[in-house]
Length: 173
Image (cartoon, rainbow, N blue to C red; front, top):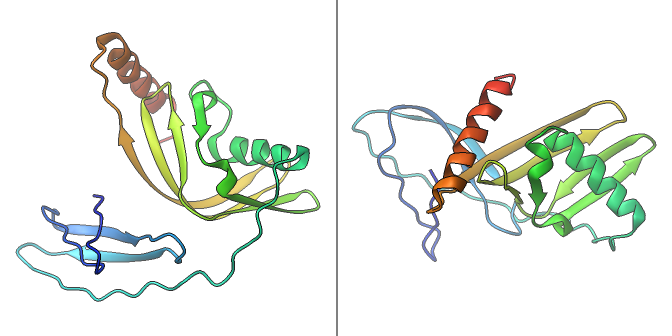
């Protein structure tokens, strides 16, 4: 589910099935709020949530050769290097900040990272909680929501659907 709040911050989620979910609240300039939540049948919840302003803003580095190398390293660590990951494009790379410490790369993002996968017809919004990469491995914590595209062009739609199945069956699940 994805909703946009009213001007006063109020929002309504309807049609949730009973069970457990993660409630994630994001506003530019504030830290991401995340909490596990249990939805019970026929029960109405009213929550008062508080989000905190981000405490520090890092300075944006001008894209240079080192910045571009860091972006490639991060992209490979986050998306991998396969048939469908090569079709991914980070739409807002300037929101990323890189910090190198020897052979380790740490990455933060000022806003959700928008990734378009042209081969799958999917747009991802990636909330980066943590990313650490070394020469031979990467570890990260992310929250993701996504939009599955549809196309009025039958050939394009069929290609996307075929590629999605191929990516699913080729994944580690």
